[in-house]
Image 1: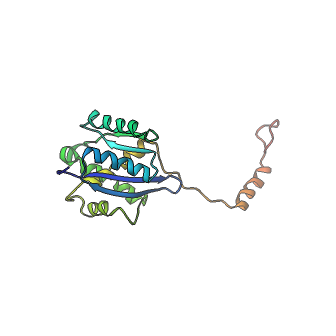
Image 2: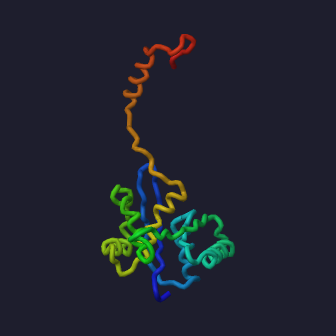
Image 3: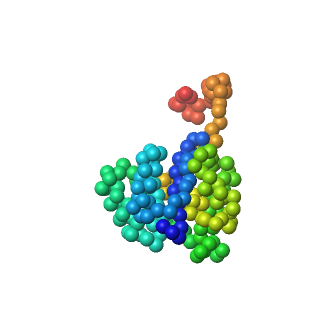
Length: 189
């Protein structure tokens, strides 16, 4: 409770619009019981069906309390994803692993895929603006798990859709009518 904040980040994805919406990003100093209450309060508030928690190093010391809470409080409608802290290599290993995870979201920002809610994202923005030396890392590190959550859920952005007009489609079909059949027994549809 006194050494670090727990980062919470709620995001949603619209793969057709190719957008990741960060709805809230907060950091709080909480006991384990308060952490569980806050986690499921956010799931309920934002109608989240899936949530991820970094379990590296804690393993069953965090997974058991979460699963036990889900059963006791009848929160089994949620899917719990165990996130693994990637330690990276070279300059992004060991104590600098958070830097590597935080850098993992930079391409998503550069591609214009991430949008922040106007309210509730100040802590994340504060940590992003002071990157790579923020005073606290917890919310920024939490955002660093977005790629892992998307990969586990197989959520990829849709390709660009070419908007064809009705006339374009009809003209294409008109050209096909005059196209010779590949085999005299076949008909062109």
